[in-house]
Amino acid sequence: MKILAIESSCDEFSVAILDEDKILCNVISSQIEQHKEYGGVVPELAARLHLENCGWVLQEALEQSQVNLEEIDQIAYTDHPGLIGSLIIGKIVAQTLGLYLNKPVQGYDHIQGHIFGTAINHDFVYPVLAMVASGGHTQIELVNSPNDFQIIGSTEDDAIGECYDKVARVMGLSYPGGPVIDKLAKTGNPDAYDLPLAKNDATYDFSYSGLKTAMINLIHRLNQKNEPLPLNDLAASFQKQAMKIIEIKLARAIQTYHPKTLTVGGGVSANTLLRTIIQQLGTKYQLEQTIIPDLAYCTDNAAMMAKLAYEKQKVS
Image (cartoon, rainbow, N blue to C red):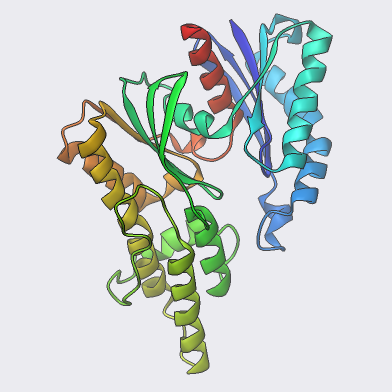
């Protein structure tokens, strides 16, 4: 079974081809440079760039995989959630290919794709406790099978990646803010500033608006005093609290749901502190399996959608 998958939920247009659980290619057209001057993703621009780039991305995927288009057995694409204009472009490309090839076309959940992106080069041992951390989502899911996902906690306002970007902007850092803050934090003092622990309650839900506001107010006070911003200490203090609440809630979820596998997915899963926390939790609670995704599969990519489609096909 050869699956051609398309991911276009935000500012990457990606095409991947999978052949019997083996990823043959994973081509990604990133728009970071185009959106950088705006400090974030501009939905209309993202959709327009998807339309411009989809042709060469598809061609590159076919060349890298050495697969003829007529060999494809199924088309998969990201159906939701995401930017509506970007999603529409991916769906149109998928449906056009499906009509041309007379092959089945199926849309899939982007968040579920992130979870199964961590399973590329791995096999899940169920149940799986999955943390999804990205620009638009911060949530915990319990996965009992490729068709059984239970959301036990989700984002109430700012997602963690969105919070990183907004804080980075106020600090005068470039977009995207996550990698820059993570790098600065490595040489900063995480105890330099006393910041709140966002939504430290009995739920598994997340809210980063309070931490974001606290950071913005702190930076404004420093600016008003004409003090130089200690970027490394600010980054380390912010990152400590942003990740600490994830650690607290995941630890409680592990004790409640008793998963056999712990994993993390989404763009923020590339964060070094978060990856360390996940590994430490797996060791502390002696889980059968702890999976840290390859960096290539952390950000939005079509390989994760191909893997999701393949795993669903196996149990259908």
